[in-house]
Image 1 (cartoon, protein in one colour):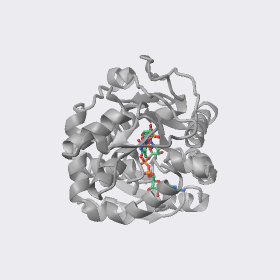
Image 2: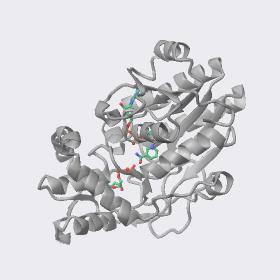
Image 3: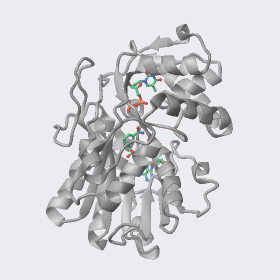
Length: 340
Ligand code: NAD
Ligand code: TYD
């Protein structure tokens, strides 16, 4: 419960996706008295089974965040007093193929929710990414912080940057009570097999070779999804209004190093890696300075041992084949058509 009692009835958009469903599970565990209403369009990225087995079942509504009448109806009917906004088109490769759904959902959808928050006086938390800052060179040692300039590279990152700007404009212009988290790459259970870590694990489990873009030198700053969910909840409950908090765990590794760890953990030879065509405009390196959320809110990563959490993630995919197998073939077919 927030100190201001604002968590009684929470609208969680995108709650059937990767981070959203982990968040719903986290909240059901730490604050079971909060009523959770999930609004999710159930795109290819969602899986309704992500929310199975929770003791306090969330209300799940299939629908689009761009549908302002539906959003209005949900807020009234469920006496919503806060929104945590995860819903988005989230995969860079897809945004390069077709940016249209990214522009619609990520920008227009955020606008619809901000308007709803404004007219009902709701608290609004926006879940965003470090990709809004663009990249640094691989050799660089600097990290992004809350004052870093916005330089998004891909259509996906550009739409997330646009949505962050909208959120700040609603704070500055209308006084809507907003906060933003920009986190680095998440990993953990329930992540779609199109993303880097699950793709490599499930490739190995299905007899395919792990696929590394370019030479595998690009660097990502890996954050366990559970640590991100806790950060989001801390900011929702205790963050300063109008503020942005960067979330990262200082786990920077090249893509090749991560694949080699996975191969070792799965007892496969390192030369099984297949190098495939890279992404146009690929970001080289992300690095997060999370000092602000550590200092102001006392957040820190509980799963700071990346190797241990990666082992647990591999184990999760090994034991949840029925969850990911339905999406695997189509995902690989699509990658194959694009030379990835
Ligand atoms: P995801 O693709 O796994 O899930 C997105 C969810 O949003 C899906 O359940 C999907 O059905 C839903 N959705 C899509 N369009 C919708 C619409 N128009 N209306 C309602 N629901 C819709 O994504 P994720 O990885 O869980 O990311 C969640 C959020 O976190 C996104 O906003 C993303 O930009 C941000 N983020 C992700 C990462 C990461 O590493 N995955 C890192 C930082 C920030
Ligand atoms: P991804 O999981 O798509 O996240 P993001 O683009 O948001 O960082 O990719 C992470 C990194 O892994 C990125 O540098 C691209 C690379 N990559 C591969 O090398 N192979 C793959 O099969 C995929 C999906 C990504």
